[in-house]
Length: 440
Image (cartoon, rainbow, N blue to C red; front, side):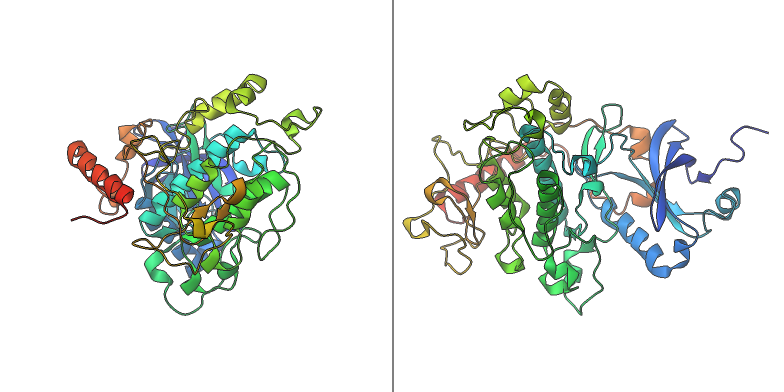
């Protein structure tokens, strides 16, 4: 008898051992038999698999994840149902007919380890931008995550197929177009759910709902615990030396009223980059030192904390002038003449929220900086990045990428040979933005 005769086979994968377990399911380390490469396989426990709603949720996660293709979103490799042979080999641990998902393996842990003990500001900022970039992609594809929290942001180490941060677990996600209807059951994680999500009101949920979850996650990292339900609480000195206006940035994401919250991930990313360098906080990395008044630059952090270099490499940042988090980087805010592409008019000076202020030609959130501070309101125009291309990322092994034909019709085809027309289109977009006028 071959030594693997008693192993559990799910499609082209062989389960090796459990990695994590929850109330409804388990994640196993598995192997893709054709390539011998490691993967993660998510299955339901036999008890939870008997509930139709739970089986539907896992299949919904498969549909949601299959439609997304982003370097900071965990890649779905395959999905299917447990067959009778696998159920028998599991000795009842897996229920025949229940769904499973095969995903890229992330061996570096989660951001839960950062709660109460954050990394240096350059590393934290780069991580936030990666998650914002992932959310922007999901929202552009019409999908809300609705469960952004530290344990759902995983690290792929340098030994994994695609190193870097990965937003995972789209189990309670919903298509944005499906949110118009009767109230639904509240789904998500207490402490990270937006008020409209806790009320189960689908009509008020949108990209801003995920931004609340992101704000709650970062609040937990730098304050030690999630904010109180219903919005931001008292801002204490953060547990890491950070920009002075970080608390204001987080409060803008945690506004209880969804109509007055930051609306888009791009707006939040642009505002984050305008916060500047770290200048104060408890600084758990140098807690024996006296508080600093002068800005702490990224290079200063790397000099003092060389262990951050590998983390920054994983996140795609190299130095304080690099493009943080891929698409958002330092390309925001500069036009061809080197000046700022957006200047708030005099009527916005001193404003905190401008949700009712009219605009000419544009109706998107405004970001103003009265007296050097930061305020996020409802009428701003973050400029488009200078480049539409994304920095190159490691490619997935082709054998894994082709693991399942079931995903073929659910993934958008990747277009090639379109650089020249895309350059022209992007140039026209930037020109329209600079002139504040549309063109045909």
